[in-house]
Image (tube, rainbow, N blue to C red; front, side, top):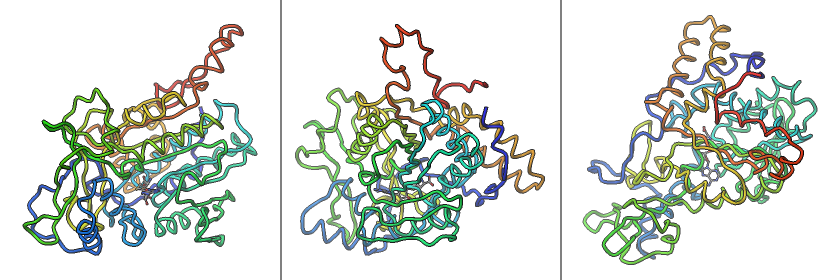
Length: 441
Ligand code: SAH
């Protein structure tokens, strides 16, 4: 089992930032809280102007403007992660998280015939911490990956975060090549000599054999919100409050809107959130995987088609009213994994969602923690490792809220084809790591 060998430079990165109290995905806020203080941000001015000119906007349009507007978007010009930012994520909490994901990709690469080359593609890489931890495992397991030709492809809309990712992965040792107008807007080389390219859109990543990873990426994609009424589904829109100048409020659309087409005919909830952009991305991932092989691992907080109103804001590790001071806080909504599964169906197979604590346990987190603890004598490091483990695994913390979901070629789960299997009595494919209990080989 590869896990035990991942010990060299084991404690690199163990001293992560102190863990603040709040991660995303715990509560929600729908703009109903009393407003003591609502500064008029440049984004609010922009939205008020937009609504005055063309009428109320959908929640999806609001999220898209607030988060990724190229001039004023929340994600575009800041580092919102970590202790001094607005929220903390698993890779920022513990190096073990990224290491186990690295092992997952190697395990899939081995199970599918050890291709001579693969691309590691990350959607929304934040500070590049997860990619860095995965790459460290790749170099520690260099003897397994041998001469495999690996390249890194990062899909990132934020200029500021792409600079931080470059620093994390190249340590400033090799100059970066920039070309603003091109789909590949930046290129570099990691400290271990692996080429990295940056894109704004998944469509621009070469369609080659790839492993895709998306951690806390799908939850920031824009959602449409719908409320069931006596007249049928009505979309929730954002309008200007007529009572208070420069204040936004939720209203219901007076008649049906086009995004209603995304609601299932047999839907039983009375409030739903739908994320067409997530559907488009999952379809793109599925077509690529069906075409070239590989796999996608999606990790996020979410539900399997059961939750209702999950749209919320985070600022400085606190919940933040989603309609107040737009552009200064993160906006997110829980990922509906049942929708992702429907979008992949027919093209690739899917596994999960499985809870984070079960996935990480199946991947051997307890063994990895033991190895790291045995190499660390310093009490503060040991405490940080244990605290990080608790944060990731405790069902009351991130253990139950976060889920893992995978997309794989059909033949990975069912063998090359049913007939061939029966005729040649081929052994069935090996189980996919993480989604069932770990077996030691
Ligand atoms: N995966 C990281 C960061 C999560 S925050 C972690 O777990 O720590 C969300 C990330 O997605 C940020 O890097 C943000 O800039 C990026 N992002 C947000 N919307 C995006 C979009 N539409 N396309 C590409 N990246 C996006």
